[in-house]
Length: 183
Image 1 (cartoon, rainbow, N blue to C red):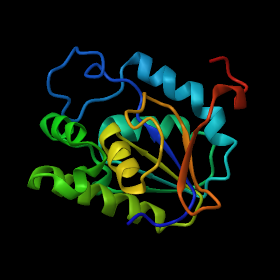
Image 2 (image 1 turned 90 degrees about the horizontal axis):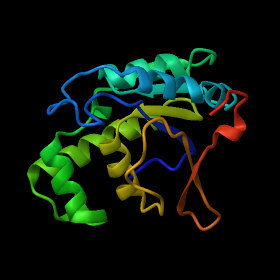
Image 3 (image 1 turned 180 degrees about the vertical axis):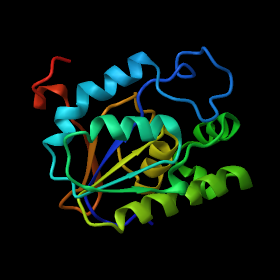
């Protein structure tokens, strides 16, 4: 399953697709609001003990990574398996619920396995690791980890994943109160 190692996750900033202005997201950049969202959490990310940053190869994730890590000294890796799923896969995956990786058809199972490989590749790096990726990757990750957390995550919300004393995953959203920037 998922390597048992603390890490941080950020979903990319807002795009025009997120607000319904484009039908097929493809490889699109952040919009102005998405750039501002990334800027708003940059101080939070800079304050964390991150050693490695891993991100999706898609523009919106790479652009978010560049903004949020502007003042962070860390190794950077692009991981193809951290790319987003398609809309139809997202719809089916979320309709199936937390057991999607066990009961899903081939496209969903294929995406879930790809996500698992991407997450584990990221977590094999020196940690703590920051993963900058997508909602589908976050959803799949939470599904595999069995973490009790809001699985459909908003744009640019940093989340700290840790293991509890009982060996179960815990997720905590990091707030702007940790940052000196106005949120």
